[in-house]
Image (tube, rainbow, N blue to C red; front, side, top):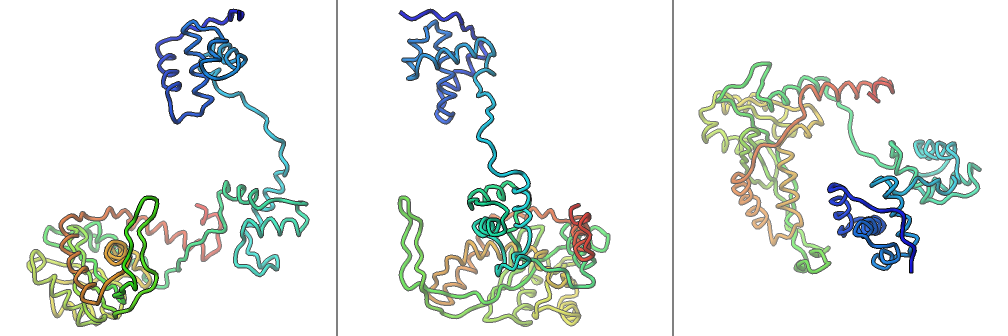
Length: 384
């Protein structure tokens, strides 16, 4: 016969509710479930031997968590802090390897463009920093660091001397402001560009549908059937898309797109229609401004700065087209590609809503300050 435990468990309604949730959980750690069940069974009047049998543990386990709960409540069911295994590498080693990871390998006469965790561990050993260290340890240190030098993104410094003014004008138009004056009810903003070199590719073998545990399969080899150019004009506030297709880019097909927009309502009777474009050959320079004004006096061409297509909302539409309409490419000919692109316009206009564009002229000013800090080499400003 087992000795009766001196620890009698009494549960409040809140404690019982919490323990019942833990005891029936299918996702909680097994230890958490066992401890909750021990306490609930103890509260039901069972002794430790019977509790141990019920939960599939030894008597000492039942006795331990019963006592802990009686002395500390729910907090007593948590694991106590443990010291763990002593550190093998000191803080100075961790700092030194992280510093090495932030340096170009060429500074240490290593013919690489960037480090891997394996190469960092080998370099640390070769320099005598440590007698031995695994690449997984180095990888774990770097993963927890704020700076991750193995990552990179391509970007370009603004080259346009009027970058700030041109970009701010476009961003203000997105907020329905032009030259500091709010746009009227009959003013519209169109974002336009062309997506060139769209290829009609036909796969050499039909694609295979997805199955259980297997993704859709697309044949790697293909045949080329030529290219076409897709012209798009997007009303940024009404989320309305206009498009046209031509064999190649040029002034003529671009002006045909402009005519398609400017001859329908509400643009035909608008007070002003602002056309935001980049500096592509179809619509660059002062001549394009004059050409647009001569053809459609109510249309005003607004140029983005050089290398600033990322500020043009039509590029977001083109991204949707690339991901949802074109890829994975499998078109029998150019007509099949053109047909899908044209049908997409009607589908898009039926459901689209304006983009949640949040980058404003104020954000632009902050970005340009950080870029200037890079140019001047002022780390404090860069960090800010």
